[in-house]
Each structure stands twice: as structure tokens, then as C-alpha cells.
Length: 221
Image (cartoon, rainbow, N blue to C red; front, side, top):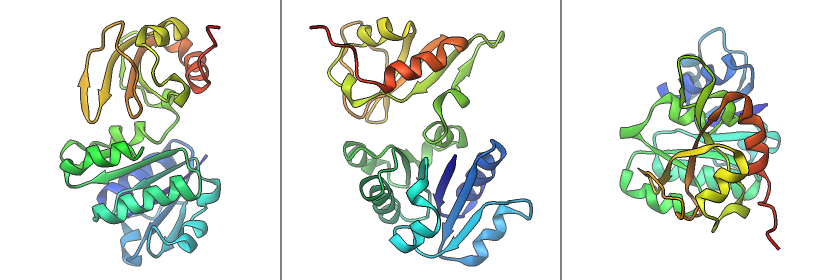
């Protein structure tokens, strides 16, 4: 799959190398051509010099065929603008923006752009929002059979109770993240737009659960 990253600072370079090691194609955009040195001599991906929200730069980076886009430059406004262009203009489904001001995170979350505030940032958090979810589980038990993974959920599940999600997937919801705060849901908690779902289930059932949640829930009528 193809990934596009805006920003080649320490975060962007580290993210690009990690995605490439996972076997995917990567293109990195940065205004400063010298920043690409951080990628190292072994990096085989594409580099584009320019502004990350400029459409010509995005197209040169392969945004039209991108599976995911990460905006990790040094500017909040640039990051959120680029993320919105990637999602709204080019239809990239998996988009994440790094935000320096945690107070803005709720606003951007309501726009449908997952954000990672700098004070909470880890490479794993960013990777979980970009890579296919089963590839980077949040937790695996010592036997390797049970995982907790952040799962992508179709908009059709909005308004449904978490017990409906558990019944459909055969898993158990470990916790939900809503507007940046994690909490333990009850059986009657309703899944809301922007929620991040963290599901505990057997590794062998992960792919099937992803297929279930990627589709609209079955009709009850």
C-alpha cells in the first residue's frame, strides 16, 4: 500500500522508515529539501519538496492512490489543512494529524480528523491510525492468541450500542476513546461519531471482525 507523509522532522522520518520496514511504499513531503537527510541512505521511498497542502505536491507524492496520509509538520494549521485536503479532496480514508496544542484536538476530532497531541505522541499511536489495524495491535497476551486492537468502524454503526458491536464481532470492547479521553463503556453505551474502538478478541478472529465493522450493521427489520 502507498502512504504519504507531510513533514520530514524526527517524527515524520521515523514514521516513514517504520512504514517502509513494514513493506509499504512511502512518499514524504517537506519544504526543506535538506530535511530528507533524516530518512537515511537506505530509504527507497519518494521525496517531494514543497508545501504539503499544495495539490500539485500531493499529486506528485501519489495522494490519489494513497491508503493513508499523515500530517506531522511543525505547524498545527498546516497539518490540519493538509489533512482536510487529503480527506475531503482526494478521499483518503485513513488520515491523522499531529497537533501541538492539545486544546485544539477536540475541534479537529469533530471535523473527523483523528489527532495525536505532541504531549501524548508515540510512534505506535501514529502507526495504529495509519496501518491496517490488525498489523499493529495495542496489546498481545504472552501466548500471542489474544489481542487488543483499535478497529476501524463503518459510519453505519453510529448510534448502535456497544453490545451490538460485541455480538456482531464476537469480541469484547476493552475501552472507547472519545474526544481524546478513554473510558470503559457499559452494555448500553452508544457508539458515537469520532469514537475510537479498542476491541479485545482472538487474533484468528481479527480479520473477520474487521470485515464486520467495515460494513453497515445487519438490518434488524
